[in-house]
Amino acid sequence: MFFSTAFLTKERLHQYYLLMRMDRPIGTWLLLWPTFWALWIAAEGIPSLVNIIVFALGVFVMRSAGCVINDYADRNIDKHIERTKNRPITSGLVSPREALWLFAIGISTAFILVLFLNWYAIFLSLVALLLASVYPFMKRYTHYPQIFLGLAFSWAIPMAFAAQLNDIPGVAWILYSVTILWIVSYDTMYAMADRREDLKVGVKSTAIIFADNDKIIIGLLQILFTLGMFSVAWIVQGGPFFYLGISISVIFSIYQQYLIRDREEKRCFQAFLNNHWLGMFIFIGIFLNYLS
Image: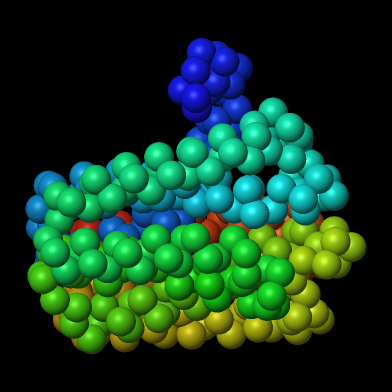
């Protein structure tokens, strides 16, 4: 049985902790900020406590489950990449079967959380499950897995509007679309850090297909994202704080371009991590906009 004593030793639990990336919360933050952007906009600054708790916990649980299924999908690839060769599954410390059990527990927990929302949000959660399950396998079939990540990571946006308003207005889909652009840009930075080894093992990514145009395309995505966020602020009649938060985010985009200028792997990864601050300052702007 999965829950036998052998599976619940302190060391085994530690490996599950690592497999779910609880020691590296960056993915949780990058998923949380757009979710909170949507929730605060939909509620005009006063989201229900239930929605805040459900979406915050749901982000954590779904990100953890996503990491598990991603490592399961990549278990025969990670062993060939220096940065990932010691991950729990590929190193043999967690079996593929255990990983599938953890994924099942994660999505089951997420579904229980969704049951506290309305029926519209519950229905949309099924799409979220499909996207989260499909994304990890896309790098084998397309050079644009980052787009699928964007579709999956941004899906909490229409869910947040549905949960708060029982409706998804046009501005929600605009926010969803521009957030996908942001995600493709920062995940391309992430892929740039692995590009050399991904080429060796045959993994596809936007960093590979963009080739020498990577920095220019990332820059265009950042510009379109910023313009899109300004349009969202205009549509919802945002105040100075909303625009200020977006304006500050431009500084982070410029800094990220500086970091990736030489395509140095560690600097590209730093640029990816820097997006946490970009997302946070946009949320601070939105929060203060409605607070004022």
